[in-house]
Image (cartoon, rainbow, N blue to C red):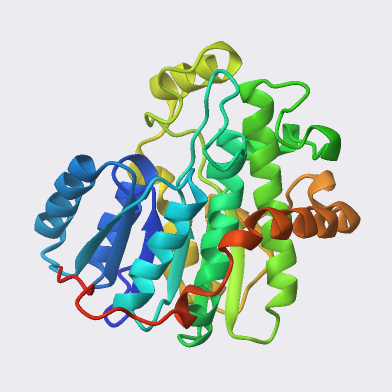
Length: 301
């Protein structure tokens, strides 16, 4: 990818302490962007933050520590961001998670559904006002070709009746596409674009410690998959390339626009899922930009 100057741009990358997220954050920093990392583990996040600062020779790399499986922490992360940054030009929803057995968060939500889908849904909603104040702006979701195996069953939306990690993964990645397409429709004409991507088979630690099919797929990817740096290329393309300025509501793979599954274009399911999701995030969904900024809580980098 040709060198692009991102100086003056503020980019937020979730799940950026390792893998594709780390590679994405590092390259954005090298392009001169102000990069805000959102990471679950403070020690790992701080180590990666220091590493990226050194590798990029860019001191404008910030860290917000939050476990995005907890919606209250998603809200706190959004509030912490808006207390310090009046603008956001690129939001990259990269973080994800999965469990071998069904686990429920403190919000009563299935872990993968909360982490992979509702967290980016809520985070994006909370930061929309800041994005609108920064146009042109871009919202990017790291989905997966695994969405082709997904199906939204409203009677089993969170694996209440039947749970398998492979199904949970596929369903949440399909849900990300429904969200992408619906939000793109809602934001037409605002100067904010919304796109999703498949990063390819990447050797990362995402599937480590998982059993069953997803564990096998993860082990296979670790053997033959591409590097995190190569896996980040489509994310970086959507975040920075002038070629996709104004392109919205699309799905990309290998830096090229490509159709997603036929099921992902079901408008009725898309709109119903949006309504259900709005109800689930409602207790946390007041715009973070509208909150009064407490004195003394703005952190230095």
